[in-house]
Amino acid sequence: MLVTMKEILDRAKKDNYGVTAPNVQSEDTVRAVIKVAEKCNAPMIIDVNAFIHPDLPWFVHMIRDLVEKSPVPFAINLDHGKSYEDIMLGINSGFTSIMVDRSSLSYEDNIAQTKETVKMCRPLNISVEAELGHVGQGVDYSSDGSDHFTNPEEARKFVEETGIDCLAVAIGTAHGRYHGTPHIDFDLLKQITDVVDIPLVLHGGSGTGDENLRKAVKNGIQKVNLATELVVAGKEELETFIQDKNFDKWQLIPSFIKGYSDRLEHYVKLFDQENRAW
Ligand SMILES: [Zn+2]
Figure 1 (spheres, helix red, strand yellow):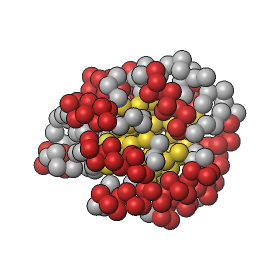
Figure 2 (cartoon, rainbow, N blue to C red):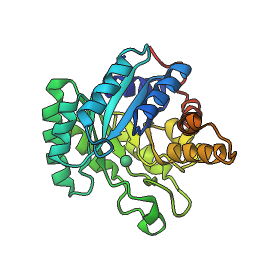
Figure 3 (cartoon, rainbow, N blue to C red):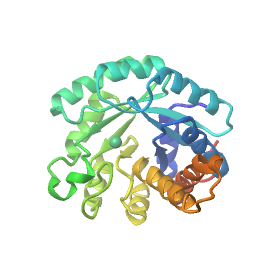
Figure 4 (cartoon, rainbow, N blue to C red):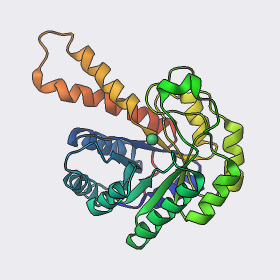
């Protein structure tokens, strides 16, 4: 069934567990996510980047059709809406949630543009995720420092002024592959959860490590975005599969999907997300 992201995350916050938000890129990966969610009886957030499909309204329509037939709750979230055009396309495509990413702008501009998105989405019952501080790229990780981390007091004011449903925070994760060892600032996470009462989102879950992620979802993070690691797990499974020169050509894509799905299921269990469907 199709629900808003707010419904999924508010429950996760109340009962202290995490929700995986896998990035999908094709019908195969969408079906894989649905299969894992149903197998684990878990609510799930399907993350879709605006650039991932040449016909986004069709792609989201297809996802809606599949999840509406499922007994498990799903939200469909536009990941990193970078422009006004992205947001409008997202609304028109049928997302139940929109991420407005203005984290590269000044604090004031981030507030103003996030507020504008909330104003557009609220009457349509579309949840809004925004980002404060900035989650950078893994390739820059060792030189990035902590200047771009989320400031707790700014976060409190940001949430109050914008009326968003969940907030992506910068506490030491990065997108893509880490160059260096990830260090999560759990003291900062605690300072943020002390003053912000809406669900929190962690971008850059891939490669962050089981121990860090488990600790994060047990200490205030409700949504964890996963992209790189799922795709890499699929690639590795595929590489193993084609080592047999007589491989069955029809099993190429299923072997990729097996790697992707197994990795996702691992995180569903790690985040205590199993049997949380309603
Ligand atoms: Zn992200």
